[in-house]
Length: 92
Image (cartoon, rainbow, N blue to C red; front, side, top):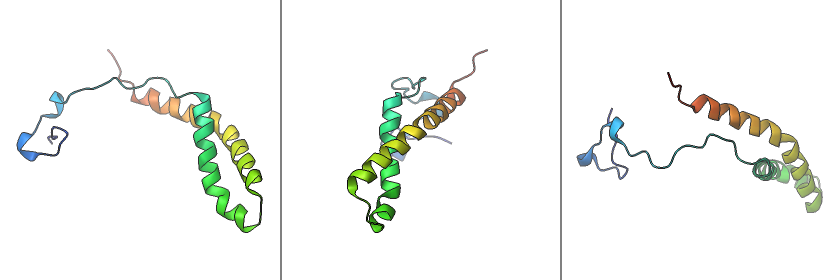
């Protein structure tokens, strides 16, 4: 299977081994605070409608989302590290 040069032009096919590498892939997980922030946003989006139906104030929803994000961050960071470790090439 051949790949295109990034523009999708089939007339300019590039063999898979000749693709430009670009910047190197990350080997370390993102910061703990980044995981807390992203997990909190996801928790807020996942619970806002249900909590709104029960009449929960917005500030309580935000605090609950931050607590859920803080609890989930170590697990998501560990999962990201495992994924990055699986992606590392093995050298002989």
